[in-house]
Amino acid sequence: MIVLITGFLLMLIGIWAMLSRKHLIRIVIGFAIVDTGINLVIVALGYVKGKTAPIIDRAVSSSQGAMAGVEAVGKVVDPIPSALVLTAIVIGLAVTALMLAYVIRLNNSGKSLNIDDFGDQKW
Amino acid sequence: MIKYLLTFLVLAGLIWLSVPLITEFTTSEGLNNISSEYVQLSAEKLNIPNTVTAIVVTFRGLDTLGEVTVLFLATAGVGFFLKRKDSEKQKKRPGSEILKTGSGILTPMIIVLGVYIFVHGHLTPGGGFQGGVVIASAFLLLILAYENFKFSHLLIHISESISGFTYVLIGLAGLAILGFNHFLDPRWLGLGEWGKLFSAGAVPIIYSLIGIKVGAEMSSLLDSMRDEGGHE
Amino acid sequence: MLNLVIIILLSIISLSAAIYAVRAKKLVNAVVASGVISLMASIVFLVLGAPDVAMTEASIGSGLTTVVFLYALKQIKSKGEKDDD
Image (cartoon, rainbow over all chains, first blue to last red; front, side, top):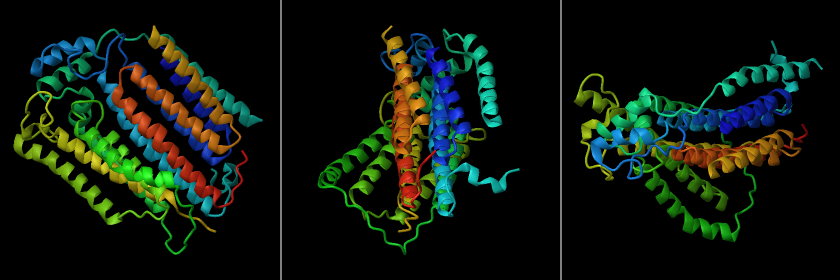
């Protein structure tokens, strides 16, 4: 619950940064903050009260092998949001690096880093 | 002035949208159907203790294949935009003595830790992505310590392409051996004993390949971000 | 109960780091503050029972992302760009 609120607040702060700042790198930082907030929200949705990590070992199941899973169902948190967020974090790094490459390229092309100077492609 | 008003309106609208989501949310008391099915199947059919690995590699294996492709495309994009200019030599500050000595001791250990993390991905927390990033951090230490450190780009490209190719090949092997509807099914290799390193079919092999591929991609990303465009 | 206290503490730290990252004068401070957010988020993931995600976030989110940002800053600085907002 608290993590959910924190995630939403981080998303709001990131969107505020993306909308109100002028410097391109600050916009990318805002994007990274939004990324972290969304990951927090997804993981908080999969939490089950008082349960432990979805790894089937002696802590959640007394038997081993094929029947261990049936006993573990009542004792672990939801594994699907973890798998999704695992994917999202790696993609987030790749997208951030690509955006920074665009920023460096724009900077090298002789213009400044203020977003108001790129007005010639406005619709 | 109108811009501040618009920003305020967008933020207020987002708050108005998210308040009912927060107030109506209650922490769930148990797993839903799909999750409990995945937890049972990963122990029963696949012999994998770590359920997250079972989902990432097997149940949603096609997603992971697509993700690795996206990662490759992004790395290729960064390398394309930041083309290296070899003609300009720029002076770099050499690393300090402590950094050089420490990197000599630490780099093999970090690489061994990364390999350990992705080989044991089906038994303990961790896996290909984490292990690959740890290996890339070892290369980062080398870059920081030796100012003229050069990667062998051919080696990186070869290891990346071969691991990606073998990943698809293993998926096709499941298709060929187990029949239609079994693309990326790791069970053609024999399941082995519960909790041992060589168990769970082809899952450790697939995750090791992902680890090598991610490590190579992250290293080449760091290398192309490192020094370009120093117009001095 | 202890988990609740830890989560509240980490939430306060990460929210204040986020506000600082948006409002900081120097870009380097903003980058490091966004790394701090990722680090706090990884501890929250660990408390919520997702150790895989915690490892990924700690190594990628707060490690490699910060390094990539700092390299980008270095390249922009070498072009002689002043970083006013």
